[in-house]
Length: 455
Image (cartoon, rainbow, N blue to C red; front, top):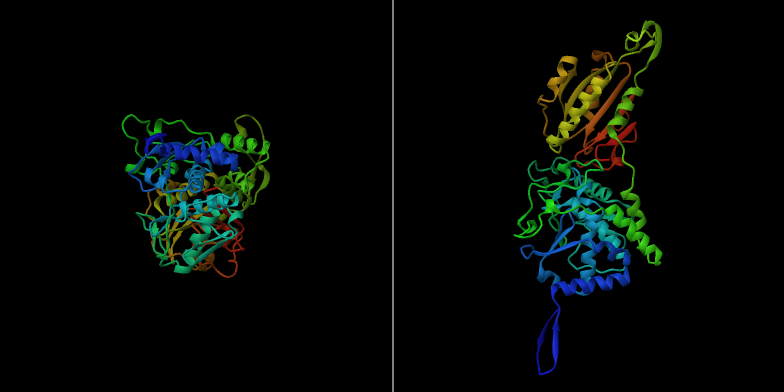
C-alpha cells in the first residue's frame, strides 16, 4: 500500500492493484470460502497489453491494471472466481474438437462462461455488467434462448447453441470455415469480459486421455507470453485441480458453508468416460453369427496339440458411411479412417464397404486385405451439405448387388444432417459422432447405438 500525505497530518491511502485483489480475497473468504480456497491457486500476473483479464491452462491469470481498478470490490470477487473456474473445471482439456465460432466468439468459451456465471449467481456473487450473465436460469444468444442452465454441462450448452444456430440458419448456410472454424449467425452477439488464453508451449496432464494437441493453441498471443525473468508457461508446475476442489469442498462443508451448484459440477467432472472404440467393436462383434464345429479344428491350438472346435457363421456386410460434408475436418476424417481400418482388420468374418457422402453418395470403396494399407492415403470426395437420406436410399438400392443378409451400418458423422423419417431396413445402425457434434438426442430414435468420440 502506498501513501500520499496531504493537508498537513491527514494521510490519504491509495490502494494498489495488488491491494485491491487482496481485499477482494479477504471478503470472498467470508462470503464463499470454497471459492477463496481455489482462487488462492491462481498465479496473478500484470499484463497491460490485454484489455481485461484472462487465464491460461497452467492457471496463470493475466490482467490489465486499469481493468481491475475499474471494478467494484464485489465485481472483482466475481471476476476472480470466474477466472479460476476455467482451469479448475478443466475447460481447456474438455474442449476437444469443439472449435466452432460465431462472429469471432468461441462457442465453447461462451458455454463455459455461461455455466461458470450461473454458479456465481447462485452463490450470490456479482459480475461486471458486460459479462455473459444468465437471468432466471436462462440466457439469450442472439434470439436463441437456452434454458435450465443449472442442469446442463458445458458440453451440453455448446451442443445446444450450435444445434439451434444450425437449425435457425440452415445446414447449407452454417458451415465451419476450414481455417478459422467460424460461421455467420446473428450479428448482435457480444463477448464476455475475459479470455481463455492457451499457451503454445504447455500441455496439461494427459491422464484423462486428451492428446497434447487438445490442450495447445498455435501459439500464445503477445499478452500470454512471459517477459524477461518470468517463468514460462511450460516451466510452471501443474495444479492438481481434482485435489484442490476436493479439499475446498471438504473445508467449506466442515464450516457449514458449502457452495451452491457444486454437486452438478462434481458429477460432471467425475462422469465415467466411454471407450467408444471398444463399444463400436463390441457392436460389430455381436452382429456376427457364430457356431462351433468339431469338423474343423481351431488352428490357434493345433500347434499345442490341443484339439478345439473352430467357429463358423454367416458372413455379414458392414457399411461404413463417412460424412464428408464441409463441416468435417481432416483430423476427424483421419479418426474415422483409422477406426475403419482397425475394425476391418479385427473381424475378418465381415465384409466392409466404405461409402463417403455429403448430400449424395460420392465414393463406394470395398475394403479388402490388399486395400487396407491404401485407405489412409485415399481421397474421399464431398464438401457440400449433409443428408443421410440419399445414403440409405443407396444402400437399399444396392442390397441385391451386395448380396446383403445381415447388415451393420456405421455412420461416422457430426450429426448435423437430414435423416429418413422411418427406420431403414437394415439390422444394426450405429452413429459415431465427432467434430463438435450435435447433441445425441438429435439423432433419430431408430438408431440402435449412438457413440461419441469426445467421451
